[in-house]
Every structure is written in C-alpha cells, then in structure tokens.
Length: 235
Length: 249
Image 1 (cartoon, rainbow over the protein chains, first blue to last red):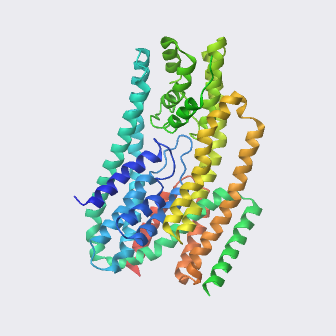
Image 2 (image 1 turned 135 degrees about the vertical axis):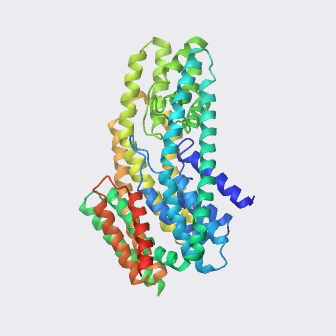
Image 3 (image 1 turned 120 degrees about the horizontal axis):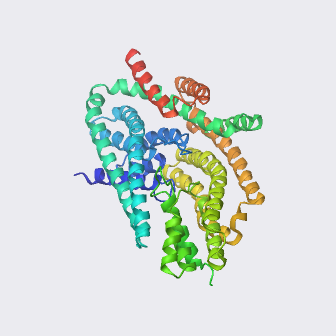
C-alpha cells in the first residue's frame, strides 16, 4: 500500500486520540492535520484550502455539556485526505477546486457520521468503568491503569478504522464525479468556499461579540484597519 | 507524614492528560479522576487495603472541564492528606466538595477554554496560515497550549497548596479577565481574517466572492439564534445548494 496513504490513516488515529482521550492539545484540529497532510502529499495549497474551511467550521462546534459535537478530528483528516488522494489521481491541475469541494464535503459527512461512533465508544467505556471498579474491589490496584490503556487503544483503533473507511468510500464514490464533472465541481467550490467561510466566521463572531457594542465596533475597526494595511502593503 | 513531592504532582499532571480517556455516560470522568489521583493516594495511604478502598471511592461520578480539573485534583489531594491524618472529611463530605468544585470549574472552564481560547487559537492560526501554513498551525497549537498546559501542570500545585479555597474570588476574577481579553482579541482577529479574505495580498478578491462571503456572514448570524440546524448541517446545506447552483449556472 502507498506509504503516504498509510501515514494519513495513522494520522487519523493520532487525531482521534488527541481530540478527547489524550491531551486535548488541538493537534487534531483540521488546520494542523491539513498542514501535515499537505507536506506529506506535497500539495500544501490544496490541503490548506480544505483545512481552513473545516477549521473555521470546527471552531464553532463546541464540546459542552451532554451534547456530542461533530467529530472534526476525523473530518479534518478525511476531508484533506480525500481531496489529496483524488487530486493525485487526476492528470490536470484544473481539478484542484473540484477536489477541494469533494474534500470539504467528505470531511463534513465524516464529522457528522463520526458522532454515533463516539457515542458507541463511550458506551463501551461504561463497561470498562464497571470492570475497573470491580477489579479494584477485588484488590487489583493496576485496574485503572489497565482501563486507560484499553480505552486509548480502542480510541486509536476506531480513529484508524474510520479514517480508512471514509477515505476509501470518499475516493470510490467521488472519483468518477471529479473526473466527469470537474468544471461543475470547481464552480460549486467557488460558490461554497466564501459561503462556508462566512457561515463559520459568523458563528465565531456571535460567540465573541455577545451583543456588546464595543466588541462589534472593535470588529469593524479591525476589519477596516487590516483592509487598509493590506491594500497599502499590496500597492 | 510527607506531603506530595514534585514528582508526585508531575505524575498527577501527566495522568490528568488522560482524564477523558475512559469518559462514559455513567461515571463520566470517574475512572480518569481516580487514576490521576492515585499518586497522591499512594503517598498518603501506605496501607494497601485503605488505599484500594479510597481509589474505588474516587471512581464514582465526576465531571468538569478537563484542563481546570487539575485544580480540583490538587485540592482533592490536599483533602486526602488531611483525611489520612484526621479522618475528616469523610467519604460523603469528600464527594460533596468534589462535585461542588467540579461544577464551578466547569462553568468557568467551558467559557475560558471552549468558548474563548479554542476559537481564538483557531482564528489566529487561520489568519497566520494565509501567510505561512506551518506558522499558522504552530500558532494555533502554541496559543492554546500556553494556557492549557500551564494550568494543567501548575494547577495541581495551586490546588494542593490552597485546597478547595483555590476557587477564590481572586482566581475567578483573573479567569473572567482572561475571558474578556480573549473575546476582544477574538473579534480583532475575526476582523483581520475577513479583511484578509476580501483583499488577499492587497488585491481585491472577485466581487462574487465578496458578495457570497457577506451572504454567508449574514445567514450565519441569523442562524446563530437557532439550535437546529447546527453549523455543520448548514454547511452541508450550502454544499448541496452550491452543487445545484453549479448545475444551473
């Protein structure tokens, strides 16, 4: 098997670990995994364009309370992975935007479809938790450590398996469409890209501004200042 | 009885990184909490039977924001030290204190880490990634972990030193100020990112892009008032509409 593909699948496992069970260091965020995958597949621009869209949408999805949020650790790796695998199988650079669109859609679908697997994993952990308590009562002091090893291995295995499945499904389902509908998919990207960015940024703005006039004014001032700076720098 | 050594506290901090590994609907962080607290229990309870009993007791339901959990862990270690020496607080008292700390820390921790620091890191990372992808990714990780890892490692010592009083009005005030500052930085970063999308490299992006970006912002702001559809469901709807639009155009 292609070693780059194997590493991509392995990254899916690592991202699944970082997202919740180990560390929560944000290494699993779509922007970070996109940069790594872009370097791995030698297509940094394509990976970044997919990663930025998924990152902005992921940032507005929060793991608070009882709600199980969409799995953007999986979505980020799958989205970039599908875009990169599709692009490397296309003969023309023209297919870049079509692959980016297919990648983001695959990433979104994987993020949503990953939720039932997170819930399943948490139900498996219930059994692990009960076993741990019984083992402790029976005198095994190492039970909590063993339970953690088992949970980490399970999370990694689920991450790897889901990444492989979604990558394969994305590639087989979308390859034909990308080949025959390159221009239409490219056009769809030109519509969807700004809409996705606007949608995600609106969620973040709402979270930060919280109907406070000073913060809204700061947003406006920052926009105008950055716009003026970029225009002056560019000229 | 010797108190917690630096090595004990570092072991607890390291283990608290896996606090969520066994998260489940029944006990939530219970097993992770017990395992993180185990180095302190080893220190304070030389008798194996008592230690096992305490460890099993700590596998009961517990949940809080995972980073600030280190403060509660340190405070629980301090209470266990007191309990080993005097017998107080008892098991019920310990549970009450743990749950009170868990709820309070979750209330402020969710706002600081999930609602402020994570989106802020994402915005700064994305903004810098438009100039240099690696710089953007590095900035995202460093911006978040500068606070996250510091609190995770030092929080054990703070909690151990102060006990349940660690969640004092002074600390709450500091965290509230961090949330406020983070929100201000966040809106500034969002403004700069919108500008970078409108005039990438100083040249205006196509009018169609600018109009659609504005449209996305307006739809997004209208959608924020509703729980359903979620942002991801909206994004999937946008994908379907864009695909249909590409066919029609």
